[in-house]
Structure formats: C-alpha cells, structure tokens
Image (cartoon, rainbow, N blue to C red; front, side, top):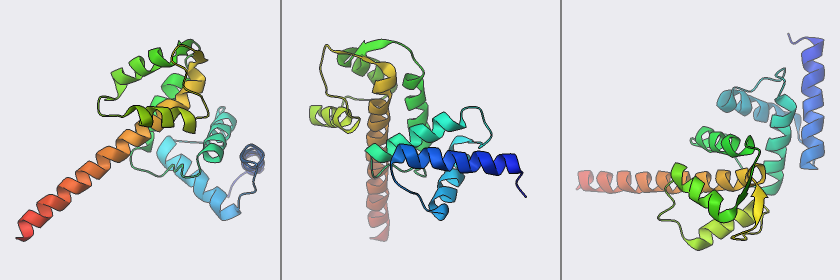
Amino acid sequence: MASKKYCTKHRGLKELYERTYQKKIADVSWYRLVSQLKQFMNFSVEAHNAASTIKTIANMKRSHRNFRISSESFQECWDLFQHYYQQKKQSTCAEFLADLSQKLDLSLVSKTSVYNWFTNAGIPYRHEKKYSTSDLALVAFQAAKCLKSREIKRVEKAVQTIDALVAK
C-alpha cells in the first residue's frame, strides 16, 4: 500500500498535469501515463524532478495531439530532447540544424519537413534569428520522431518484400 506522502504527491502531479494540459484526465488514463513514464523513462513520483517532467509531458501532449510515450523509439527521442533542453545557450536555426545533423542524418529530409518540425514546435523558422536551445529542444524531438518513424516504415517495407519473396 502506498504511503500518504506518496498519494499526496501523486495527486498533486495529476493536478499539475491537468492545469498544464488544460483538460481533465481520467484516473485510468493518468495511471496509464504514469506507468508509461515509469517504464520508458525511469520516472518516479517522489523524484525531485517529477513536477518538471510532468509539466513537460503535458505541454508536449497539449501541443502535439499524437504524442505517444509508448513508442519503440521514444527513449532516443527523449534523450535528444533532454540534450538540447538542458543547454543554456542561444542558437540560430541554421546553427541548430547544423548541430542536429551531427546527431541525426538529415540528408534525406526535405525543407518542408524541417519547416514542419519548427511549426509543430510553435517556433517560426527564421534562418538567422536566435532562439534558446531549450525552446529548440522540441524541434529536435520532432525531428528524431519523424526520422525514427521513417526508419521503422523502411524496415517494415523491407520485411514485407522479403516475406513476399520467400512466399513465392
């Protein structure tokens, strides 16, 4: 059985999530979310950074309706997000993309996709305008998510092709 302190903290985090997300969340959905955070991010309700994690997740879910924690590549995307979010510097979009290309292969990505990443993150793409890297972290998350999704689709297509050849 959970302690009173744990239950109070848990309830407080749920309220924080609802305030940030600007919607109520059902108890079942809340417990599923906490379970996914524990599974994919080693989250703990009693951790000192629990509130900031919940607030970040709520903001991401609010701005991106299809944001899922349970995807296979979530941890890699989250690590990249954290890398930029924890930096305390300014960067232009061009500098940011140059740095991001060191971590992800952006060679096959169209300019439209890049603009979409910025738009989805709520940041207008301005080549020479400086932004905080903590603001650009969501763009990095979008980029990683997009590229991982493409990679998964390519692998699935290759597997289907192999299965079709084997079936013949």
